[in-house]
Image 1 (cartoon, rainbow, N blue to C red):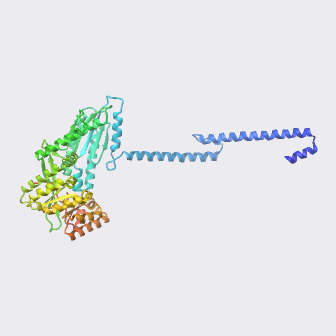
Image 2 (tube, rainbow, N blue to C red):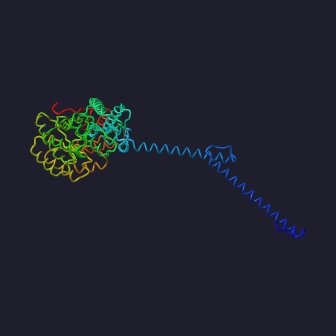
Image 3 (tube, helix red, strand yellow):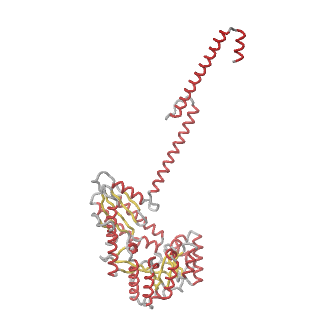
Length: 503
């Protein structure tokens, strides 16, 4: 530019130079403006390509293709994340064992119904409690317990499918619920009778004392959740203290929110006053001819109307209301009387004690005095306590086992084999019997670690003169595996059914 200007200065006048410089500046400005216009136009076109929902003919085809590929990838990622999120939400509200909706889903659906604006709507709520879960887990193993829960879930689902709109839940280990919106009053007897019939059929199939009980009530929008739940709980309590596998409809609000608890409190008091108790037994098959015969004794409680009550619920309610000590005293007194009625019996009788018995000093003193009065019977009694309970309070466990030795009774650690810590408890208590945890029996066919652990338990026990029994033996292959390990005895439905004492 400077060179051109100086060259012009040598050849033209100053006026011509000024005009030429002006023209040149205007040309540069025009060029700059056109350049800015082109840049803005290009910018708009690029922005249009980037924001277009559908691919256009494309002023910038490579850019359009790249943008579209990126959009497709992002859409796929968003869809995948939405699907994962939906699956996670479903899992959070789903029970792992049965596949039913869980307690969180139940609370959500119940709250939504009670918050409806149409107050005339009516729903039917049915609570179902499986009564034999703890007993089946203890006597037959956890696999049998899971099968029992799945069978109940299948029954609950099949019955609820009769109604056009229904929701089925598993609320806890042993509790289920059915919620039927837009339900008429006639639904209750249909639902209750069909559940009882199917529960009765299942009871015959698996040879149990009972299967499950049903408590039914109705609810309307505008009620607080505590009201229908309290009614359903009371209905369930009345069903459990009525006929086996029965149902009950509670339509009116109870006098207080804990009427179901009060009902159970009166029922347990009636058991204590009437001595409403009977016994069943399951024999343990000895595989070592040097050991004494041994029968597992199972208490059964009789309600005010002479109906059989679910033992698991009776114990739970007695524990809750502080009457567990009196109930166990009744069980032991009745057991001693029953033993006297069978003087020809040469088998040892085993009875499981609760955590309440272990931690109650007054109960231990009472038991020692009572057993000292029955010196002929005491050597034939075996008192069993679960390893998990014993491990919680070692000092109380030692005191209990020493007392049993003083009076001539036998002791047993049941559900033994939770880990290497079991041997510390074994060394401190020195039991006469141990019963292997059913989990070890369930896995013994396929798990080499369980096999080695059981062999170690049997070898150490035999050196110390302790008898080893396997609980929950259900298959021939389990029995054969245990026989090869030289176990002393086996217990389970495979070798012995549960029968009433006296038969």
